[in-house]
Image (tube, rainbow, N blue to C red; front, side, top):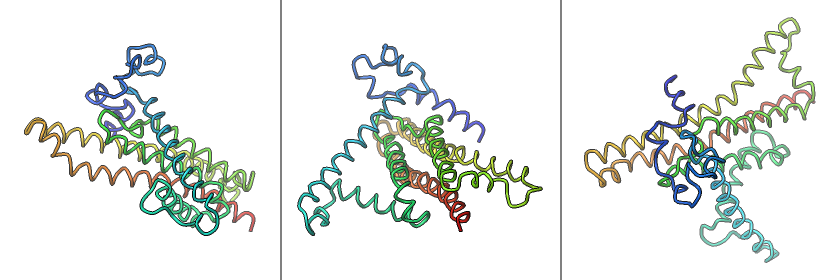
Length: 277
């Protein structure tokens, strides 16, 4: 486990860090160019992480914009027609299915009122992590969620939000809750609860990083074995079962990240509800 975390902190193995990326084909975008140095692409373990992240963000913005346009066209029809889904599976329908499913998940845990406040964060994290995970299936693209520091940044955002949820709902009562119900044992409870809070972003980071890193590493190993024994055909066919497993891992890890985010917010909000009652 220690050696695996060491590889995660280093980004990827040497073979993966030096692998081809489509960004290398863009004029002035190579690791040795001025743009590459400005973006930190000359650092092997972070090669093309930043442009990959921006590419994912741009993709999500475009797809979300198309879904919004579909929704606006439906609203423009007026009456009952505004609520009728498109025929077939369109981008609008896909977004509505995912958002409705996430809303029911969040509302079931923290209530409908709080769901309206925190659904945008949970849905954004789910979609972003999912697309980031799946980007690893594109040749020449390393998934951003394979990077430890990238995932830590996401986890720290969650850390800030669920603590904000507790503080904004009950003020200093949130900190008082950390001290426990017994005044004599307050210092002990405060230390334990603080450690518990600090472990949450670390847990989110390690879980996502390890799963995506191992999945991508396993695909690379199997592809290499196939190429060694059967050539190009083996490299193309042998990893297919691993790809299906990887697809499951990508979806599950995105769901787990969103679910744990909701749980952490729910715990903070639940303490606020108890305080008010």
